Length: 237
Image 1 (cartoon, rainbow, N blue to C red):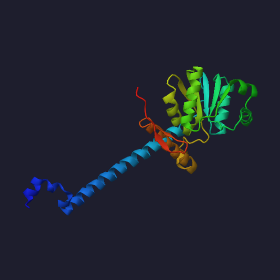
Image 2 (tube, rainbow, N blue to C red; image 1 turned 120 degrees about the vertical axis):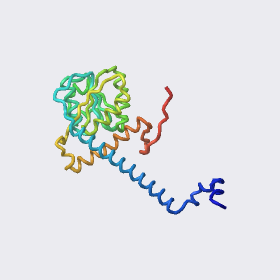
Image 3 (cartoon, one colour; image 1 turned 30 degrees about the vertical axis):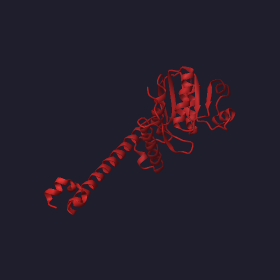
């Protein structure tokens, strides 16, 4: 069969009829494009991490925050609880929600562990034991804020955890403003995160969690009880 006949019949489009050199060039072009995409992706990922780390390490604890309607603290460290209770004691909020408390922890145990004033603790501290992660913190906190009709809330958590916490909370607290109160355990604003392996690891892990939280805004997913991610169907508006 002649070349014209092959072209007419469409058989020439079959890769088997391409010269070996042509197929090699196609594979080379594909490989180059793939490597280019991977390089750009890695560059964007690394650049994003650097921006995230610089932003987090530059956060500082406000010396005298303005008064709000309430205070929310996300469990995860003694310093967070101490900071939140000090804000409540200073009258920076009417009530305090401690979100993510272990189900087995009693109010009395929590009060003793934080050395909080008994009278203040009994009158003005609410405890959430349902939240298991940051998403749960946001869900339970939103219920609490809406039930009290609060308009301005101080959010207390560690500096590295603040961007993701604000992102998750902001999706649900549509009628209340959040005032971040980052707790800084280790000063990193001089670029110290680059020379401290533990801090670098914490920031890197949190950066990946932050990216997943951003992705949830596009393709909503939520961890199951087994730790797997499942896609959530969005209800039509």
